[in-house]
Image (cartoon, rainbow, N blue to C red):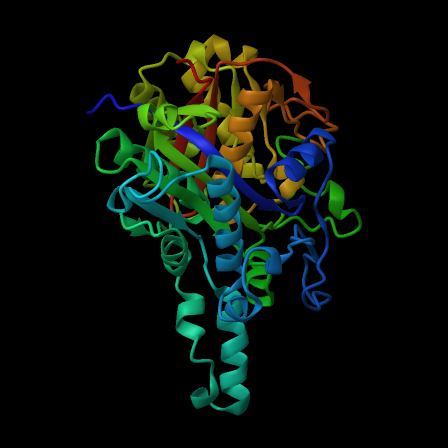
Length: 419
């Protein structure tokens, strides 16, 4: 494998906590919850009636109103987060720009777990009521997941690899990991990557609700997402986007880019066990964490913080804890572990992207975000979960875990940038 180094130079973040990386960071540091009763539709007949809706998304600041009407919400989130990340990085695409990248060597890899489900529901209803010859001519391009990276590539003239991974809750970690490999191997020089999701819809919430995956703490939504806590009862749906700009280090330094962190490791594998439940003891997750460490040439003792998958479901949190103890051994007790899903909700295909951004910020700013709503410890979850308040702590390496339905796993490993 090539020894080209890969760095993060730009971030874009949209969650239930707000629009913009700094807005989100302030909310995370305040231990705020973005979870509230659903307002998009009447959820009164469902067992779960709350979610992490994005409430302050000024679409007109990012996309022309006419164009926005032709896009599903997930693609709007993707485009907006990409704009934030590209603007922060100052990414120059095109050799006509000072220190510009060749357009053919700039890729876009952005995925979604579910894609345009809102448009699908809306147009199906229209078809049933008025006839399917009356559906929107934009319906197909609203629904398909690869339209998100397609639109981003068109906006920035990025002519390199352009595709959308779909791997449930591991989607955007896979997107970032595959982008990392592409740069490391010399196939590309820069990639805009991550994920977006907008699945707070009747069909989506209804589907997850009837499979008993969601919390039903309707009387207290802001305290419903409680990863690793004894009284957790299911995950809370979130939405939004997390996008990063990855670049080959030497080019990034040459053009004077501000480097937030170095991406040094990536693991991807499968449990090959069950459609929704993790393998016993987190066996697959443990193997994936080891793959990321091996990819980086690092030892477990070099990692100081894990941004956990931490969904707030009984199965995930106990198995992820077991997997961490398997991989890190005695060092597991010295690790700080937290789940920011306690504040954002679970953003499905966008989760790994959002958490990669948060992990990079934790490295760069020397503060670890908390796991809020942590009241009663679970004997099966016995690590240091940075309970309820952020912690000023400088760490040199951060691991970000993402595990999805179908037994798919992806782990990213970031390190403090050293010249």
